[in-house]
Length: 334
Image: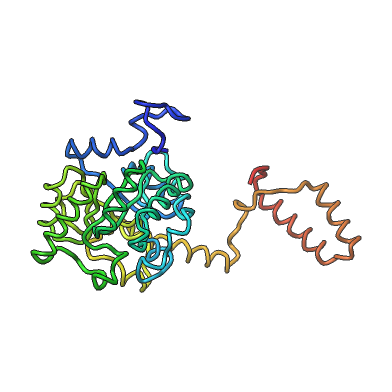
């Protein structure tokens, strides 16, 4: 895990090679070189494994799971405040990718203390490397600063902040007026001053994202913010074209390019499976690998007859003869 201290200070429980593990320092170095940072959401072990193998820099275990995994219309129903358990499976899959998880809204009076407590649990119990904090209200800035001072890396998030849709009036782009555009820049600067190592810019016009990126010393990660950010993030299910059902169609963002059509492949595979099961062509000989010797079959048949299960014995005998004729391979392991 990259939340182990780097070799420049302590080795940690395992040797750590800079070429094998992404850390905050790696992201800063990429930013200084002008190399784009890649980030993708993941919510479970298999998807995080794919992200890790692809060499994606950052895995965001985001609250967008509420929409693309749990079928809600917004990100609000999912709760990461109760426990960090939803982020643990992606953490177990990752050997190289930097891991970040979001916090939920808290009452302003309790913001800093609760945010720090939850952030600590994300690192200790969830295996995360950092947390992402939405918004730029004074209480959020205070919370970001408190988390950083607690020794935890924080990624800010401005523009469209899904956890605040009740305030901004839905999933609406931000920064489309002079005042709104200036607020995006000011909020990003405030988050930088609070100690954030990067800022997500969501659904803002490209000139606003470009200005914000230029004004900051830390990297910006764009999502629906144009090509001028320091990096980009997309939702795993969206970019792979995994979900085809009507609910997903209404929440798929305009800015998302589908780099694959995985949903079509899944639908085809499931349809073929259903057809083969119904036609009894699956499982055939190739997928019936476990054999019982002829001697044990005879003994089994006799025991069934003793039990008065003559019909079952006849069925078992016919099955044994059919399997033997098919020549299925014998394997001890599952």
